[in-house]
Length: 479
Image (cartoon, rainbow, N blue to C red; front, side, top):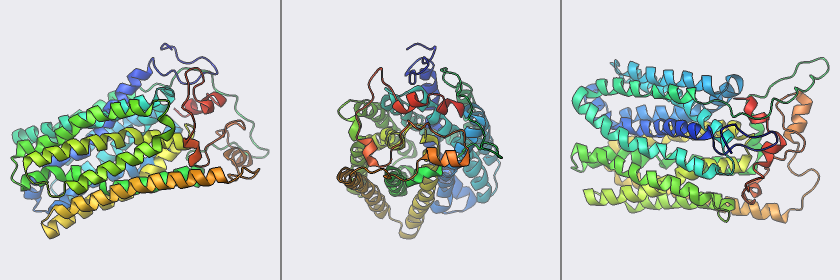
């Protein structure tokens, strides 16, 4: 379909201006996931200047990631209230201002507030709206689009890490932070292209209930009652405890093992190069008709592979073994990155995805605040990186096992339980009718109530997105 957008009653265009949105999402995802890890190349200089331990400087990346995840509900509310484009423009300015102000910091607390809080918040206000907009433009090709957008993380990580090392050698950490702040202004350009997809006009607004005015639901917390969502949240919490730890510790681990600084920084680039190939390939694989209904199991397999990679590489000390670890880690890490949001959207459906994503990121923020700083404190106390790889690998592998077992058990229970008139409880439509909310789903739209919703045939060309066809104007009203 051309750039003119979908005809009335037809799903997302799966192309046209959506490719521009995909490129912007690629850039935003690259900054969101690559930037907090790339900043770790400055940690040794920060430790020297501020007389701090590694766990103290690791808080900069952890706070940045925690803000990226923890402000998810805030981002969801702002997108519903103001739309994707204004939120992303404001986020780009905040992210840039945070790094520029951090270049003038004289205490660690100032670094936490600027590079950590401000930049993390700015990245969050770009990341979530870009994913929401990507979901509006793609349905049939959504797994491939998610994989291509997720490839921004390794591309930017492989570029930002050596660039940060170069800037550190030429201008020091202050000059590096200042120039990184300028780079983050590209997020504003990405926000500028996020125009809502053309399509049918807005729905007629429902009448207000007698004696009251209609209320607009800004955050759908009812999604927390879905079993599929609960399983996904628990999996993501366990995953986030250990997934980012090896990547954040890798450069300093290699330097302590005697690897020269430039070669140590290049290790993150190796992870990025492999990740670049893994994410689009895994996204295309997950889009196949036979595999798309089983995406949760592919996701659990990727988590298990990542955890086993950490466990088997705990004793890696030579540069050759570290390179081998980076290749295996980049492959499994890329699979996780390509599938994680596809699994969530398949579980809760496109209308609930903005709220579900915000709540998931909030829970994930708690794990991110626990994981890397705790690992850094263990390194300071034990002077040994080995236990960190064992701990992180166990947590990620446990997340993969839990996802697979919980998915299988919930599916079997839902098949064994005969459907009844009261199965699933009150619907969102009933809640909205009681509250008089205009943003409710129509009565014909059926939301997933369990993990069984994941085991459905993939959408075909010509019958794309039943939920969107049932209510094509809903998602676009909020952007």
